Image 1 (cartoon, one colour):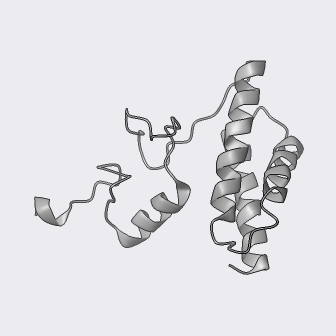
Image 2 (spheres, helix red, strand yellow):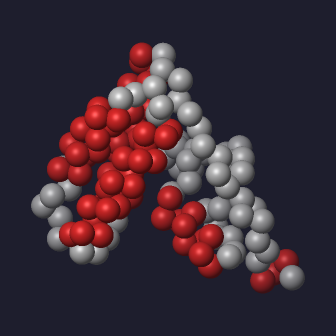
Image 3 (cartoon, helix red, strand yellow):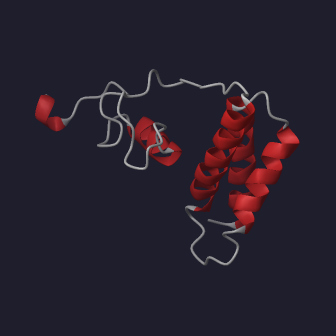
Length: 123
């Protein structure tokens, strides 16, 4: 991932989190994202940095929102989330997995029936 691509991806992370946490100031969200991004500055492999930054920032913002009683906007662009939570306790899907699956037009093991695809075994 080039530095420009990473910068654009981080900007998109800020946009998504600003939509998800409309009661929090965008500047504060950007600060949290920048702090989390800064923690990963020393890494040589940069491909997953935006995903890791988004996950860490979302976790911090959820905690802040819960402690302050702020309403969190839950976007369901792909439909309802599964009832079960992922192993780390976060019920949200990995944004990279969702994007990949939507491009390929089929479901993956993490998405189940979320995208409405069928597996080869079901055909």
